[in-house]
Image 1 (cartoon, helix red, strand yellow):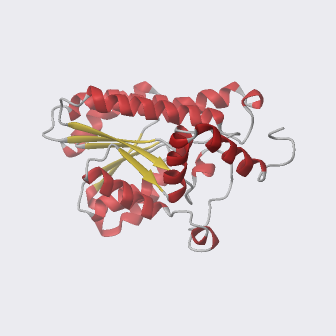
Image 2 (tube, helix red, strand yellow; image 1 turned 90 degrees about the horizontal axis):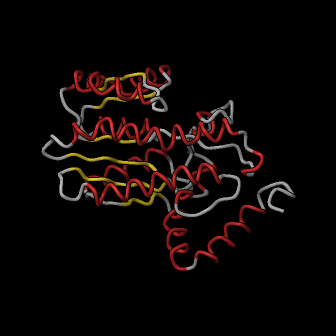
Image 3 (cartoon, helix red, strand yellow; image 1 turned 45 degrees about the vertical axis):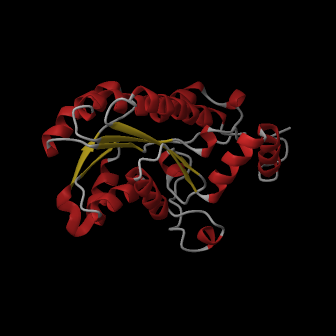
Length: 258
């Protein structure tokens, strides 16, 4: 989805700086940008390391002179395991990237954003950030932390010209399992069976996010599943949890949720 956000912003004639720990992925994005590649700069940054993020600020500003929008899209999921079965190193990695990486980016770039005539922070949470999913407890906790921090920032920055948007994607065809080290092969492009099941393509999600940001929306729900579960969880948390439990139990091997 991060790549689609970059390409969509370039299509709208924005200048974009893409930060990623994966240099090969950055180079591929430049190639996909085609004739718009001149408006795209890339920088290898490990957002899980505060020092790496802090060092990137001056480099980013030196490239284009200013920054008006920061989109915190980087994230990984955990293996589908119970909390008791997760290695602590995995737990730490999920939080280092999903939450602390987002926090470091905000703290590093916010002083500059506050100097701009208008600026925006976009944080990608998840529908797992507002309701529980068994087998993704730590991932959900990290995204819930992003949610609360983002919504608090809305209040903290209310008197400034910096706006904050929190995004809650539902199921999408992305390479998050590959980036998380859980799969060796990338997913298909979603043009076939997955798309027919109603799972959104990243390109559609990117368009929805950018349009929502243009309207200064505080919260953006991506996909009917995310919208439906948000409503259901707010109406009846117990019923929503039981619904998810039944759905998840039917997809896992016997015993996982016993």
